[in-house]
Image 1 (tube, one colour):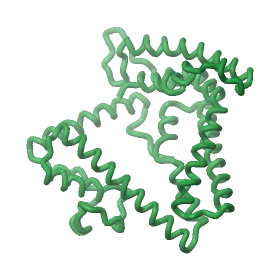
Image 2: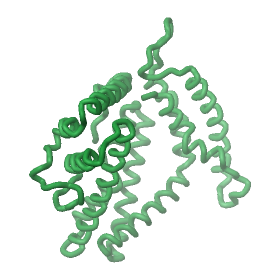
Image 3: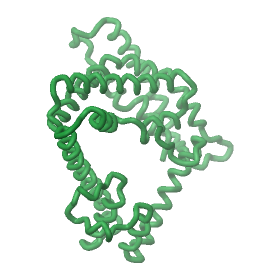
Image 4: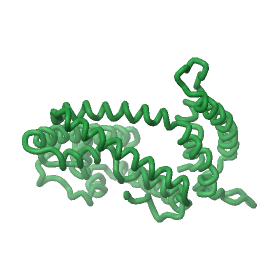
Length: 296
């Protein structure tokens, strides 16, 4: 995994595309102070894009062997050097963040009403809960930029920790009772079942591209991928998933997959897994970590 594309995404990705495309003259409702700030950020972005492009062209990667006499870049130093720009982008896009937050909150409220038929009072309480959650997450991000947080800390923030769906489930568990709770659980179970099915089919499609699975193998693989997923619930009763007694234990997913593949396919699959582990290991080692950061 290359660090430079990651940094490029931070300083010149979606935020950069938005900045570069702003036509401030047509935005009469934008305060002059914000216009000035966006113009300044646009200029800084051009400089950052040029720097990222120069680094990218040099083909320096976190796992690449440096040329003779050339040292590897200090990834965390690069990240810390980017912090001032990230802080400015964060401040400059606060109005857009608030607008997006309002829109996403309303979408979540509509979804929750459909799942559990929330009362107006419950909707108001949930909206406040979601806004408070967002502010806490914003504070964590700001603290990382203001303090000594490194790239690994940023990655940890996005792995396994609080997320919008988790906070919705927690709120529902604490605030819904009786028929509302039952209706919500049923709806969430259906959503999870669809997500598991889509994920398994997507994985099988990727594996089929390189391993050329036959139809029987695809069916067997679907069973293994679904039944060994941490979100699987026996009450889902998914089509294509056999009796619980036939399912491998979660920790035996690799062995179960190996048992489905023929020797040639398995050799190729194991080589792919080793290469993936090598790349990820080199990347996380460059961050001073033994492996992917664990959730909060």
